[in-house]
Length: 235
Image: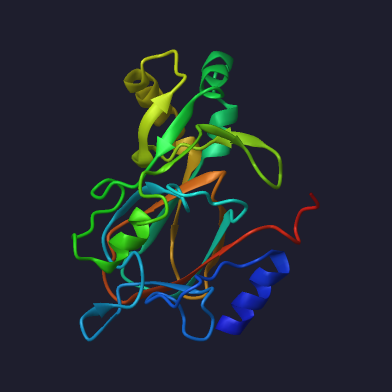
């Protein structure tokens, strides 16, 4: 698929997100397409998530993401042994015992990025400013540990545990509850993995899932686009 094809398909589903200012990781012709790549120009990064391992995360964890809730990834160059794993956190939530689900439905968390957790960046890395949301959500954002999806209206677990800085309204010791949730959510039954090939296109809902990636080896380029479901659901 061409870049024009990708944008056309995405816009048939909903609205696509493009930064207000030109960013180093945006395609010059189609700024909705973020380069996820380890390709450098004159020694400088040309994309985000360049080459290091990424642990479990989803989109916009430390900011108000609104209804921008789907990420599409299209593979141009796959690199060597390029593997991305996905976790179905909605089904994991539905399978929780009633008492645990009732408790976490009342829990609110402060979510904030902390370097060296799901992603490890040098202090002078130009990606770091983006993740820290400097000047906007510097202190993170509060949201419930569970959610109602803005489009399909289903409930699920917003378990981006690397981002959780503080927890409120919990009855159980958070350390114990967090370990229980971690062991439950990341069972093999909720996780699947994909080895990339050129031309692969994957959509993933950022409320209903988490994803992670191994360290990048070899030339790798994916186009990443954030979009909503404006044309796919009637509100």
